[in-house]
Amino acid sequence: MIKWLKSLHLWCNRYEWVIFLIILVLVLRIPSFVMPHYYGDEEIYFVMGRAWSSGVPLYQAMFDHKPPLIYLMAGIAPTMWAFKGILALVMVIHTVLFWKLAQLFWMKTRPTLAYLSSIVFVLVTTLPTFEGLTVNAELLMMMPVTAGVLILWNAKQNEWKKFAIAGILGGIGWLFKIPVVTDMAAIGLFFLVFKRSNLIDGIKAIFSWSMFAYVVAFVTPLALTFVYYYLKGTGPDYLATVLTVNLGYVSSWSTNTYTFNPFKSGLVVRGSVLVIFTILLYIARKKLDKSFVFASLWVAFSLFGALLSARPYSHYLQELAAPFSLLIPFVFVAENVLSWIFIAIFIVIGILVQKQINFGGYPTIKVYQTYWKYSIGKLTWSEYLTHFDNATRNYNVAKYLNERLMQEDKIYVWGTDPTIYNLTNRLPTGGKYIVSFHVRDLRKYDYTIENINFNKPKYILILPEITDFDELKSLIDQKYILAKVIEDVEIYIRL
Image (cartoon, rainbow, N blue to C red; front, side, top):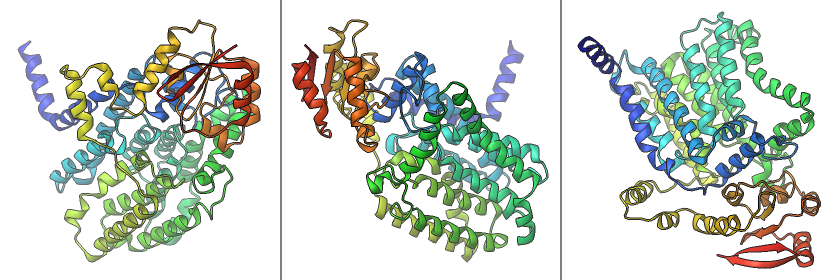
């Protein structure tokens, strides 16, 4: 027993920093395990997950625009709290992987900076400031990407098997969200082009077996999902969603439609800046630290990925968490003017991006203060709910419905918040579109009203501050009567 305890003590001493990081990740995530249903994206994922677990064909009969892996995770989780638990597990693994990468960057020369880098990573990916406590695809997709970087860090350029493994890992990240392709492009460029001694060798590397293996392995997981859904008979719906809708999604914030327009969305301008930056970095690479070049290239491509749709949602910036955390220490140890020029370029680009996109952070200290008050009994559950958007309203509406719904009864919610579906354990009855902005953006009003007429939901709920739907209003006037109004939510019951 004493021998075993000594071995444990030695092991803990050896890995004390990574143990500290894991504990920090878990402690900072504790509030997420008691948070109510409230966050729109999470609720959509959970509706999709419940639909999948109950046998509903995704994309054909239930719609959201992301690839399937996040919905499968939501379907596996029996509760929202379990869903948050899966995210916590992923982030623990990612933290360990990132610590190993930070060690490769700094441990032999400046160990303090490896500690700094890892702390920055944990804080950025965990604190509520950038939605670190919510389940989002950006956090989930980056873990396998970091694992791929670790595999390639000391790989020789003819070790195509390692490039294939890294490509497959990136492909798994692609099954969470499309923008990960930009991260994988940066990684492939660095390890197969930037590391070559001259331009001719770099061009040859583009056509090498390692690059071929990397690219083919990367697209394989997504390609296999196309095969799977085609064999299930839902291939066209999946193809239309993952490719066509996502392509239009890039421009939808700027155009208010799902029509792809790279000029109006700003993709051409941002892409041109990225190309120019990449060329400058390539030209200067031999005069810069190798790790600095890699971190800079990765940050640039990750930023491009985060800005694909030009939406100001702070969780999009989670795509930059790993490369940003690797780049930050260079601010303290940049050794030449050229390094400072590139750091200055990042600062200028960051200011311009913020001015154009206007990313906003979320309250952080308040989240932990509120949780602490609730955990020690100073706040009741009802009082705790008031600190989350529309939570009190949604829980009260769900309580009203759950007291009246029979097992076979259906509901339809017209609004941007799908939470009530999850709180009542129901699925939408207006077809595959879960929320009103899907119906609005894709112009699916006729399709939705046809499905409502077919499914005949017992209750139709109209949430406040949503887009008008004249056909739905007409249907309600003819076949429904107002049963209850709860905090401006109109609840209609079928006659």
